[in-house]
Amino acid sequence: MIAGVKRERDVDEDEEEEVRVKIGRSHGFEDKRSRHCPYLDTINRSVLDFDFEKLCSISLSHINVYACLICGKYFQGRGQKSHAYIHSVQFTHHVFLNLHTLKFYCLPDNYKIIDSSLEDITYVLKPTFTKQHIAGLDKHGKLYRAYDGTTYLPGIVGLNNIKANDYANVVLQALSNVPPLRNYFLEEDNYCRIRRPPGDIMFLLVQRFGELMRKLWNPRNFKAHVSPHEMLQAVVLCSKKTFQITKQGDAVDFLSWFLNALHGALGGTKKKTSIITKVFQGSMRIFSKKLPHPDLPAEEKEALLLKDEYQEKMSESTFLYLTLDLPTAPLYKDEKEQLIIPQVPLFNILAKFNGNNEKEYKTYKENFLKRFQLTKLPPYLVFCIKRFTKNNFFVEKNPTIVNFPITNVDLREYLTEEAQATEKITTYDLVANIVHDGKPTEGSYRIHVLHHGTGKWYELQDLQVIDILPQMITLSEAYIQKPDLVC
Image (cartoon, rainbow, N blue to C red; front, side):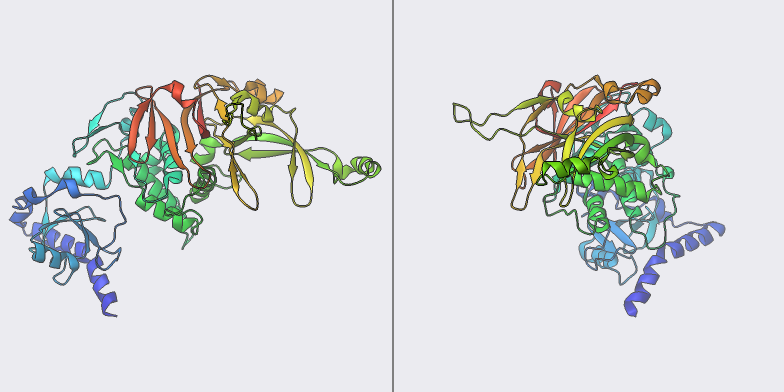
């Protein structure tokens, strides 16, 4: 009961402060110390890190949390018995920031600090972007200098690998470099008014992804990297621990779940669109034909094939990404006792969608022969190259290198005749390429990203960011690719 009363009082501290300030102003006076705090020079910007969960380092409470701007730690409340107050007295740390209201206070004197020199701190905590700023992001390649002295390109920023979350990092970095998706999330007004049912936690994904996007593109960062800690905590919670920070996951599985989860959280349904479907959703025709069991006698097979159940059926389906199948990798070594790493052109594996190529799909009970043909191309097309094959005992990786062009990938021949007549633009340029290195269960991920402002390619792996020649990208074991329509 006491803790409950204490929290209510903490929550109302800022409201009480506002009332006192308004009363004071109405009587014509304001605390003179507010604009002349003598402790501002004690602020240590090099230790400030707002990427982590906003909870008190002692009580672990999320309510009314303040950041000490001298040591960077988080504490609850600022009343005389609060953790922030005690910290200020014990360590003579005087300047604190309320992480929710973005207001500064001096403790233990407990007065509000008003000083324009602190605006850089609130901007790092909560970056904001104007429409004009967003419109110019892809028009220049200006380098910015962080407070720690390192230079960086906004958007080309390393993400901290907390333990085994690089599979999620590369997907988040790829999505952050898709301009229409990025622009939507940089402006919080685009989604802050979306109403969700009471108790729905999925909207937390939207909020955290927006926050992460604004941090990645912040031109006034204190450091040249970002920790996705809060974003990943939301992923763990909303996926019910299907995806975790401490356990390696599959980038394609995460991408599929994340896009669908964002679509649903933004109010999207099968019929109602969202920014996710506007950017990534295409459609296709699926021609499916049931096959008789292979062990049946020939006469029985022929009889079954005459039945309506075994005739080819056509259905329409939407997609957020296309899965490309690799040819089977060689089992034997060459004469030099080295495994041959085969190569295949991208258009060979794209033939799956030409409407003619058939492939057998097996289930536990039935087998089907399917072929596919595209009916609508999205503005951004995601290719997922199927490298991993799972069975009851282990996961096997196919090392085949896919030879793909960086620019001018024309997909017109994979569209139906009707779609070819209506789709004016069918050519794509690559904007992101996710790579998996090493063994299936122990490997690591990295990503190649095109910076639109400079036209240069960069490789990001955890905190490491290096520039890379476009020719080197095609030599990697690509896993996920994001081409952009060429307008």
